[in-house]
Amino acid sequence: MSWDSPLAFMLMTGTGVMVALAAVRLPGPMRVPAGTYLIIISAMRATGTVAGLTHQAGLLVRGVVLVAGAAIAVARERFGTSMFSNKLIGLPAYYLGQTLIALSLATL
Image (cartoon, rainbow, N blue to C red):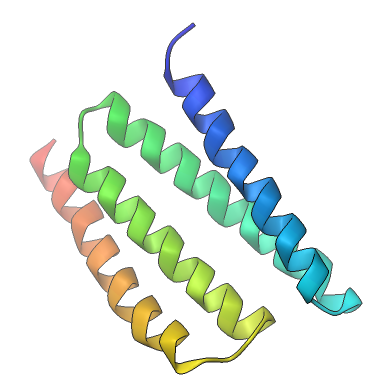
């Protein structure tokens, strides 16, 4: 058994915790869309992280984590509490993450 399967499992387990916390705070009609959004973002984060570590692409891992963090800030803004900090963190993290992902592909 390689290390990437347990790592992906741990990253997706963190998703379960985020979905459970979101379910407690959100009104009923928003629980399914927000939970689905978090699951999709977490699957992207797990896949990108494992791919980056497998190919020794540190920029890819950093970029994926930043884009996932930006997506969580968007989820907080759209589904939870609207706060300026979500916008302040989300947009720069997204653009920096996308830049790191592009740079990682250029160096492979």
